[in-house]
Length: 78
Image 1 (cartoon, one colour):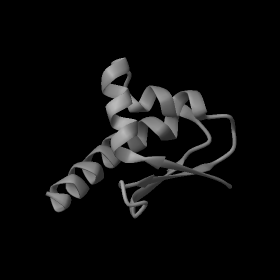
Image 2: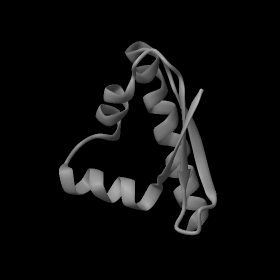
Image 3: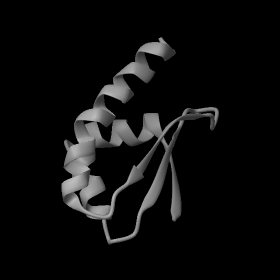
C-alpha cells in the first residue's frame, strides 16, 4: 500500500481556493490500488489518516463518515 502525507491546513486551503471538493481529488487518485493518506498538522504530527479505497462506490460510502471524523478532530484542536 502506498502512503501519501499531506499537510492538512495547506490541502484544505488549496481546495477552498480552487473551489474543488476533497472527494473529487480523491476520486481522481483511485487507480485500483489502496493508498493511505496521512493528514499532518503544521508540526508534522498526525491528525488522522484515511485509506483511499480501490473503487468509487466505497469512496462515496466513506465520504459521510470521514467528514464527521474530520469535524470532530477540528473541534478537539480548538
